[in-house]
Length: 261
Length: 268
Image (cartoon, rainbow over all chains, first blue to last red; front, side, top):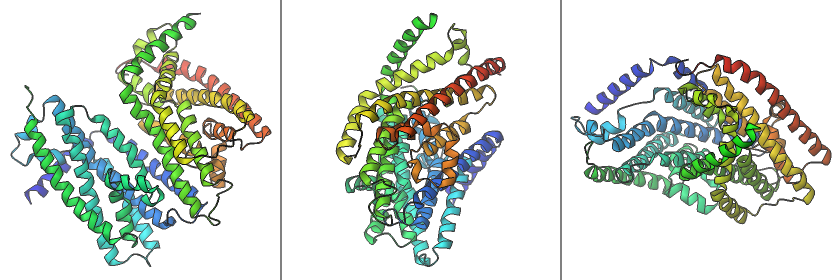
């Protein structure tokens, strides 16, 4: 309860901060809409030439694109900005100010700032998923929807843990900002179902950079396209990843020696 | 005269800088590999799902492999990032010291551009080779295609550099270039034929592409190198490239003169 209230407070402060730069906000939303239009035009091009992509038809792909955009928004909303701040804080020694707060340090470091305009991505993603669902009403069941929400939660947990491990790496490597660019590079591959890649690449996109758990599996569960094994894998992987990343964070903290080191 | 001694000096300086930051720029360069690779895999899957399951408008999977491998290489040879860089320089006032030099700032940016392309070859060439081995592209290139295609790549680089710089000069009037930069790059990817060869685009989009410079930057050199264009189309394309370069130079001269009058250093 206290944590939820705190997240609400962080969100309020972020909105107040961003409200000072309204033109910037508008520019960001414009870029989001531009990206969105480009993605739709891309889909149009693909499906004016073919009927399916690795077994996914145009409406399935629309749902997948919605999940991709939504994930992109969620990562940009709180994961990547806060993790970037952790890396900066470790390098500059200002992580002290996080550690002295009377609240769990991992929680505070992970949620202290929100990039409000990223909500536009999440909203657009939701609209796409809803449109696809409306069209695919024969394939989408209530159970599928419930599974979809659960798989999304697993996906968010996995990607949060993945980023927390990257950020914690800063305790040893100091300069890891480039890792972020590598991540966004590879993330591009998640806009298509992993079925289109050769087996070796597919395996890597599932277990090394867990993109499949972020986009393909949640979207697949919506339309009954995900194997039970992958559902179990998502749940298990999410629990393990969160526990492992939290342990790694505490382990890394012990190495941190503060501003005066 | 001054330029003849200044440009090699700029180039040496840029090469040294790029070499210093080789790790970082390698990451930028690798982005240019991911995008075409994803497109390659996507179209190979699309062929399997197409009505006849063999080809899409004359492209079999190995033709797609060749096309997107070429967009990877041509994309590297023609890349330019001044839309972001010039905007950043103008915004932060770092443009002022560059203006003090007796040589136009565009020459220094051009030296950076060439140095980046040269230094990153060290990492890109092995990656390109591995991709050829893995995907076995069907190039179908004849000597005559090379003879036309290599000049086409050079002209393409000039078209892209010139127009990228022209768009970058909007930063004299607009403070935030993020949206313009993203729009420019996004349009380049799509209308340049880096998501799909132009023949695969819906008619309406192909019309838009004809009015823009991007297809002459990527699509045209790639299809020329693959030997997919008729001699008449190749000649026409080279003429179009030259026309875009000439138009770009005219726009540059006008925009530079107007823009530099608006620029007033930090705090503008």
